[in-house]
Image (cartoon, rainbow, N blue to C red; front, side, top):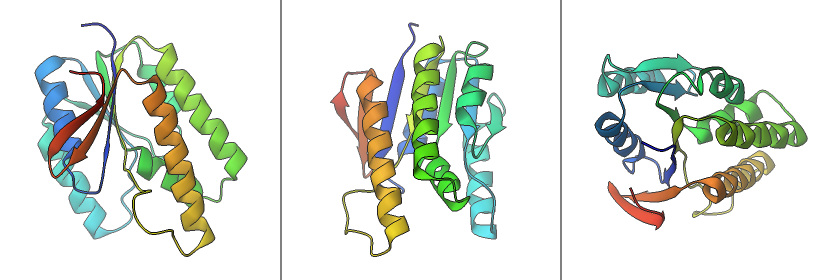
Length: 176
């Protein structure tokens, strides 16, 4: 299979991760799941455990909340596909550590360059957060703006862009 960059976005609990996993399981044998979540409470621990069960033992898993471009560069040519889940948590991790906007934009650019520079296929999961009300707090608006910018940059270089709505994929760009 030729290298593909598949970008899957949508609202929370819209079926993005399940769609990504099902596609990867049907089309790739050497798979790496690059998880950006951090377990900070019991609810998140349960979500992570559920995701692990959904993936199954045939997946290699790498948990990396911050330095995803480095991990992509390290593993990018060693597997057939990297499923990156998710951009939204990664950006949240960067913001909550007090990393400045310029540094975050540099990390976003590093991510884009690492996606372009590796020969593996990528499935990237992200949330569409700009369809609701304007956040009341400055950090919320900053997060929304960075998320929207990041999604646009990834969608621009993606071969396929899918918007998930209620478990249904809507193809915005390309086809599987």
